Image 1 (cartoon, helix red, strand yellow):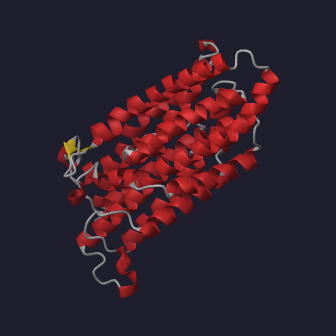
Image 2: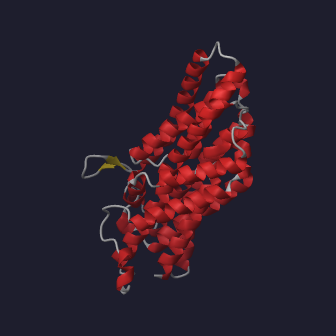
Image 3: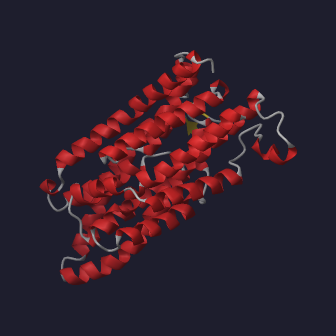
Length: 355
């Protein structure tokens, strides 16, 4: 039971860090275009993060039972997965790099599961069809979307910006700024909703996996009646108390802000006006909500970053500061392998310590 409480604490810490680490995803553009002050933008994003986090559980189900063999997972596995993700998130936040919290958690979980299995690759679900005929596993749910979702963001952002430019070719710049200054309030809220609907569910899934593991291992067998809600004998859904706890924690983290990453996303990568911010946020929100509905845990960071790149590239390719983009891409490439190694190493240390 003590281990589970540590897992729960680590999960909530991860969710809080996820909130302020990825705040930039939801508000960088609306801050950089000066449509909202940073404080107002954070509050707006926090509200819509909360609403989005309550919108579904498809992604949570993927994390809890669709990536690694649940029978091979222990409470130590889950704890080490979370610690690996937390370490990487704090490191990239300190550097001001918008890395993926989603991939940090997935990488940590895969590495920790392999550590528990003593290096056995069979603990990972690479690709299979579940009882409902849906494709699950790392390839269809993580690896393939890791490439397709940023591509969709870049192309979608570029196309929407081209269409808006064609539609507004005769409009006065001042009028365009006024219209899209108001419209960006909607797109920023939609982006916050998309972020909450995808990112908050990942921690819901990891807590549910811990509950199932604790029940199966007998760790909860001596619990009093009032704590019987902790026992999960099969994956039928995500408990409501887990959903509301994760939603509130992410919203609180979002409210704390993540100013280092906001500067990178909103100012250093490309100079934006309200119409550009609207195009980037709308495209990103559509991609995030669509993938969340399909149970695909994509990276919010990757999607909004490539949307901003696509929108910026419609001005001219040189408008995008590709040196900054290169630093971001390195963080993307390294997230999965580094967090997997951290998760694997932490499990190994736990085994040496007798856990």
